[in-house]
Length: 623
View 1 (cartoon, helix red, strand yellow):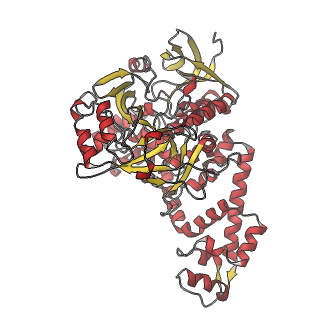
View 2 (cartoon, rainbow, N blue to C red):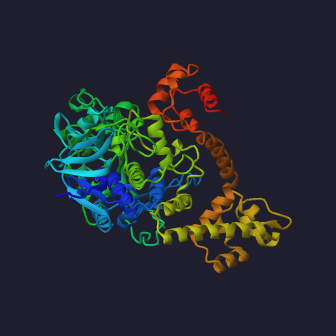
View 3 (cartoon, rainbow, N blue to C red):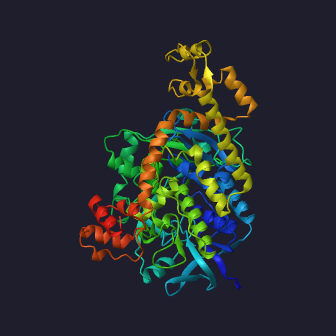
């Protein structure tokens, strides 16, 4: 039946699994994607949106590396927003509302059109090991399928348990069964497992809502897009989201169900996401707040289903019903589905290498919520990296690891395997110490050359990156070399309340002023002529403006990163015996032995390892 020995088997067809399968296949590996439901590939289990603060940067990076998430988002978006536009460019974060049904359909179509991907619908119930190596999987039908590598991307399905009030039933998602057997096999061979929880809000009938009582949240007037590919286009029309608020009356009604809430009566003991708490958790933790925002998000172009973002809950259905009806605009609400909480198994990510291969079992990779993360974007990024590294492993090539100054994806993976996580991990811009370097606008410049070298970015993509860099450099040089006379620039300076000049000055110096933007400068005839003559588009103008205005910050951050990277190059042997280094603190010895950092720099990021411990290690490494 399955006589083929696959290069890569991917278990799970969510965001991590889909990106993993696409990446491995695009690198030439014979790949099998096994999922319990082919209809739900890349299903948006929670909110129908991609991107957001830091998450948008991750989607741009996935796209720059040849992943599919950006393209699928562009093809199925119903609204686009660039968040944090009032702040500096390091904080700008793209976000798109998606058509949930079209999103899953588009993902499946793209995977089916990807050579080297096979599909099989079944549950993986067991893993096949040969000593310390993975060699295949066993399905619920008793079928053994052999593979050189295996990537587990099981999401919330590993022994998943759904809670609604005092009702509990097994499941990995509403209407879908849990996955059993994998955790047990992993624990038997020595893996440490834990439990986490997440929640989802109710879905309601949009026809039963009164939007006139809510605040409209339209998309950007001039929407952008996620993918750097020329094949996708910005939205020509958009659907609005809406916002409403809870009230003290709503909070009091919600509290009547606390005694039946699994969150508070002890039935849920696992930890939920700190930055996306349930509504009962919010009113309990922030008791002094009189109201909380609710975002009313349409699920697609043609459906009336609406996602009530901010009302994540596991309270009994009668309490959900009574409380939501007291929210402005929801007085006559009809429920499609009540909110629920779900508990699932995860494996502390300190058990992984930077490649996302496990330390215990060769050829076995973990990606997504199994590693303790939350969010489609974090999962997709891990899936992409696991798929790339599994393919490189099979091909006998060097692993692909992104550093913290190269990508948010590098920060994400390094945080996970170096620090671990005791609660669902979510990416924020504040987690990245080099966020001025890791902007959403330059992900292609940072990462597409790497992807091209790996063989997962097309020549067309690479040519576009080279053109973008060349034209940006050309524009910067033009500004550095061209002077402007006072009589030409002073009217514009006066208009923008900035100091006038008395003699000619280089345009670069003028352009660096914070009071001016490049829309102002495009009124200057010489700049107009340069833009037309060199076919400079808005993307190049934005790149140039960022370079001019933030050159000092970018250079400073680059220098800091280079200093730290010198310690990244001081490697630590994988078999180094920390127990013999008596000068290290006991905590440092224990944590270093457990995590096995690959470099001095990574060792320094481990909680409990002090600067003096690093000095001792540097002596032992001959520095």
